[in-house]
Length: 91
Image 1 (spheres, helix red, strand yellow):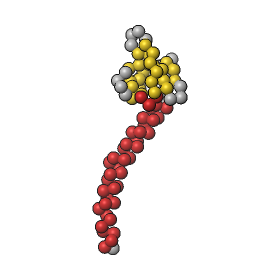
Image 2 (tube, rainbow, N blue to C red):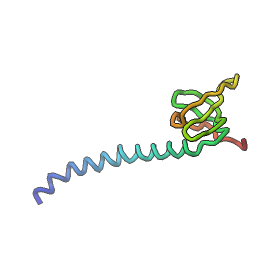
Image 3 (cartoon, rainbow, N blue to C red):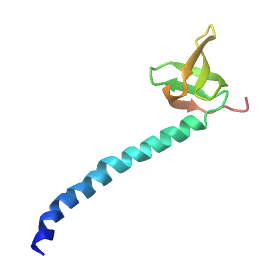
């Protein structure tokens, strides 16, 4: 019994560490991955660099977005999408 009492505190810290840090991070990563997998042509997005644009074309790991008033086309990696502002409405 004496040996187990020394393990209670470290195991408690590991459980707290898991539920307060590791598990929430895994949930955020899963949500972000799902968002990037559900991108559609016409979605308004913001990249992690702060570029706002509309998706024109989606390939495997690359998307082409249209930005600005002059409709400049940029090709960015799919992992660079930070957020979907509003999803396409019938495009």
